[in-house]
Length: 340
Image (tube, rainbow, N blue to C red; front, side):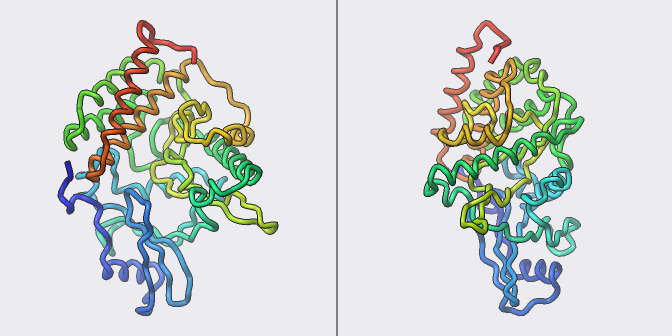
């Protein structure tokens, strides 16, 4: 099922781009260039090159109408959330995007936008496979240390630091996520029963989820394309930054896209020990095995709803989700607890 094109995040027009640049930097010569950057799922992202040669990144959020037409987790306020996350994580500012200008009152166009400095270096995704084991270990160790410092930041509520729902119980936030995706399944032609199955599992294990009582700050989409590395004076690659924090929120740290338990995570097998060396001591808690499988199912649901919304193939993701839930059923039949 493919929705009409007008429901997909539309590109910013040249006239709008000129207005944004003028607002951020003052009137610019016609030689100012803006090139769309690929890979983003939510924002219209451009590499701006001003007439004086200065480069920066412009990110424009979807409009409110576009967000409403999209999956439940779409938001027109993601860039506002990102700035709030960056403020909370100010101790990590050396690794986070630097905002040059932003505008959220829609005086220029009817969408939020931010202009940020270009992150030094290149994305880890573009070079990870070409690095030798020593170089990779250095980067993944530094990424582990960064992730631990991020997770050490906490709050008294689960949810984003601003512009989103906040809950005193972790299970309520997970249930809120899943309830929205049950609705998405019906809207976008996905098998609703599979998503209802996930909702029942979240309800069944609510008490187990609520054993998580510390809301830790997580990135929520921490993987190689969002990790940047740069060469130091000796020519070695080092961690230089992390981008795209608009889905950052206070949650169970194990629900991070690179969970420290790693059994269902996104760290390449050879780099798990390096990541953990940087992350530091970590002891799995009772119940982590079940919780991690629930988080993986939520992640698959997110991927399925996005693919269906975009009109892309999603059968394999739904199959993975179905099998993941069936496995969780088999592992937990007759029990509500699992020592992990």
